[in-house]
Structures are given as structure tokens and as C-alpha cells.
Image 1 (cartoon, helix red, strand yellow):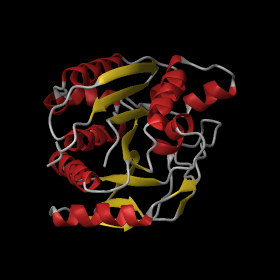
Image 2 (cartoon, one colour):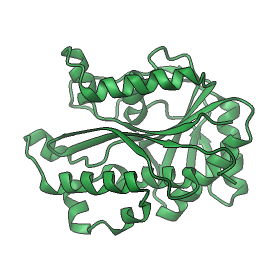
Image 3 (cartoon, one colour):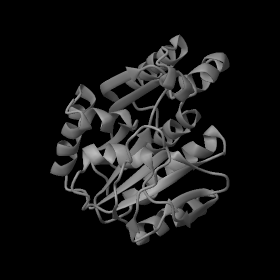
Image 4 (cartoon, helix red, strand yellow):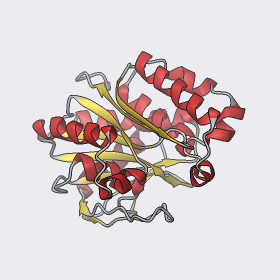
Length: 264
């Protein structure tokens, strides 16, 4: 069974830098409060898609018993760490479900990269709940939606209570960030995506202008949002709890209601 809502989580190392400085930003506070709400539902496992894990082949689920941290965004002066237990049986079930749905999927070992370690640090600090990290692929938007649909179908059939979440950024132009240069295209991208999420107009994500995308450099070309769209089993509007922007980078915390049985 699933918790009552799916989460779209922010992931940029600046959140850890802010915390180290004692600057508990509105985003940090919002994610912490979301963690308190999630803890009240007592999830027994977390299934989490990382926008930073992009497979060149099939979709992957990490079936390790314990996960170590992957430092995949060097140069920020922080090393995100979220070593935590895994759930091999649940990972294998997700892969089997995807295979039955006609998708290429396999178990693999990666650990918790920054797409997950950063938001989970603020969301579930105690690191006691088992996590199953999931990848994206280089496949089509439709394939990513199908990956999300298969995950929903499998998790709704499970006896344990599982939380589902997606970690990543929106605009993510590291060159602009390093130069502290504001990009109109990044801010435009964020605004259009936030509007689509609030309205449930998920189809608008496929209509974003190529020139804007080239400048804004969205995280994973926003394929992580396509997985979330498929998981929601419909163009479900979400509640944007917080948005944070800095030069070249944009992040959002949003939640989406999960109606039991909607996954088919």
C-alpha cells in the first residue's frame, strides 16, 4: 500500500551549504515539515527516483541491503551523505513488475546519489527507513511514464506501507551558477513547470521551447517528472509547497494526492 501523497523533492548542494551556515531557509523548513507529515504515516519503505541516475540501458532498481553515498556533484564544498538500509525484495518486485509490463528493467547497485541524499537528509534524518533508489534511462518520455505506471501498480499490491518520491531540480545550469549569472530562460522554465504542476497540465512539459531548454539545462531533461506523471496515473494537479531559485538553479517541493486504486 502507499502513503497518501507522492513527493517531488528539491536537490541542490546549496541546501547543505545553507544548513552548515546556520541559514535554515524556507525550503529547508518546508522539506523538514514534509518529513514530519510523512513520519506520521509511518512508512515501512521509501521508493525514490533520482534525476541524477540515468541508465544507458534498462531502468534500474538498487537491490543492495545497505546503500552508501555517491558524490556525483563535486566542486560545491560539501559531500552529501545518506547511508541507509535498502530493501532487496522490494527492488526485485519493482523490476519484475516492470518486466511484466513490457519494459526493460533490471536490478543494479549504485547507492544514494545527490538526487536522493540531499532531500532525504532533510526529510528523514534518522535514516532508519529502507530506501530503494530508482534510475531514469535514456529512453522516451512515454517509456518514463510507463516506468512510473508499473511502479504504482506494483506498490499498490504490496502489504507494507511505501512512500514514493522523486528527487531532482528543475533548471540546472551549473555554468551560470558558478558565474552567479541570472538566466531569464531558467526562471521562465521554472515558472512554466510550476504552473503545469499546479494545474495538472502535464502535457505542457512536452511543449517547452527547445531554445529555452538549451539555456536552462533542466535536470535530466525533466524525465524524472514524466516518471512522476506516470505514477500519478493521470494528469493530477499538485500542491507546490515551496520554490527556490538562484542563478541557473531552480528547485521545488510539491506533493500530489494518491487515490487508492488509481494505479490500475
